[in-house]
Amino acid sequence: MDQTPGDPVDAIIEQWAAVRPDLDTAAMEVFGRIFRLSRAMGDRMEKAYADHGISRGEFDVLATLRRSGEPYTLSPRRLSATLMLTTGGMTGRLDKLEAAGLLRRSPDPHDRRGLRVTLTEEGLRLIDEAVGAGLAVQAEALTALTERQTGQLAELLRQLLTVTAGSGPSS
Image (tube, rainbow, N blue to C red; front, side):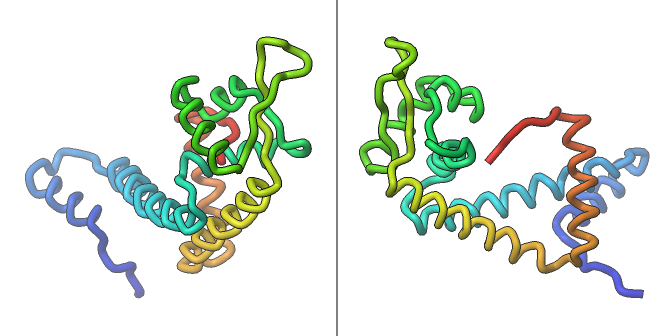
C-alpha cells in the first residue's frame, strides 16, 4: 500500500508520542500542517506579487478595489474594514500605491469630509496580471492532488474555517 512520505509534522508528532504518549495529537497534525502550508504558500505568493512590484499587503488593497467592480472605488474606511487594518496602516499602503500611480484618492462627492480610493488604469492592469500570477502559483501547488481531492479539501477547510473563525471576504 502506498504511503505518503513523512513530513516535519510527523517528526514532531513522533517526538510528542515518545515523551507524552497520553496526548491526543490529532489536532496538532492538522493545524501544524495548515500553519506550515500557509507559511510556504505565503512565501510563494509574496514572490509572485514581488515580480509585479507589489507586496502582499499592496496586492490585498488592489484586489479589494478590483473585486468591488466598476468603477473600482471604495472609501478608505471600507478598505480598512475589509482588510482588517487600522486607518494608519491603510494610509501607508494607500500612500505607496498612489505614489506608484496604481490608485488615486479624490474627494467623496456625497460626503465632503470623505475620500474615495479608485484604481487607475495602470492599477487595473497590474492587479489583473498579479492575480493571474498568484492563481498560477496556487494551481501549481494543487497539482499534487486530484480534482476530487482538491474539492474535498476545499469543503473540509470551509467547514473548519466556518466553525473556528466565521466567514467573510478575503483576497
